[in-house]
Length: 68
Image (cartoon, rainbow, N blue to C red; front, side, top):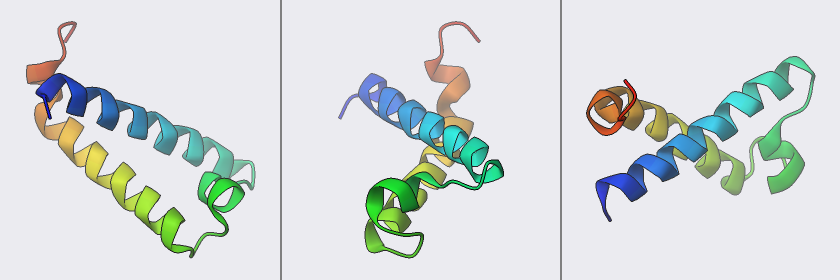
């Protein structure tokens, strides 16, 4: 997988995470809405991927982003 592809995927997952935080404030949750509850395997996997994406972007964003 190329660095650009990984950058795009992790950025997309960070957007999902950010929207999820907004929805949590409004008493909704993406994992619960679309994946069957907050403790379902699918929602846990989604949250782990979002967290890993945040760490990946934290470490690599400056190198990968052309506008930074």
